[in-house]
Image 1 (spheres, rainbow, N blue to C red):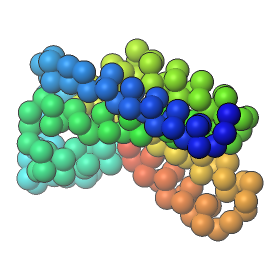
Image 2: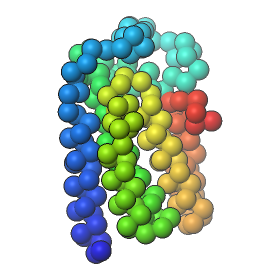
Image 3: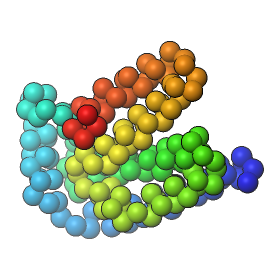
Image 4: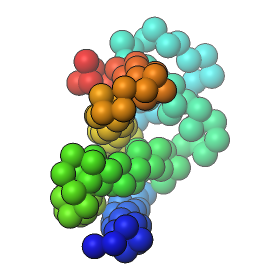
Length: 169
């Protein structure tokens, strides 16, 4: 498959994944843990030290200031992280193996019921997956090229990722 055709395929897969994730985005009411996160983070006096992994909740606080507290507005933040995971997993699969593996990885992630479910939940799960993929990709690039820019970006992504979710430790 040519590079141009592969890029078009990744774009189409990402669009399909985005459409699947946005379908009925505001249909379900907020769950208890989502409501707690929103109530705590919608307060103007946010305290970074309230939680050991505050980055997602800090982003949620800023997101609430921009988009309000509707179900759709709140869920667009994890939705955005989830959609960005699709081309990122393609890059990892392509880089480690070949374009075909990257495309299959992107298709699997785009259609994954678990990833679809957590893309619509106001929790840091999709952000954690995004940062795990970003950290992995930057680590691969840093090892292969041994350029300082990739090592710096890897370190920055890792630090931000650790502050998003404890599973990235």
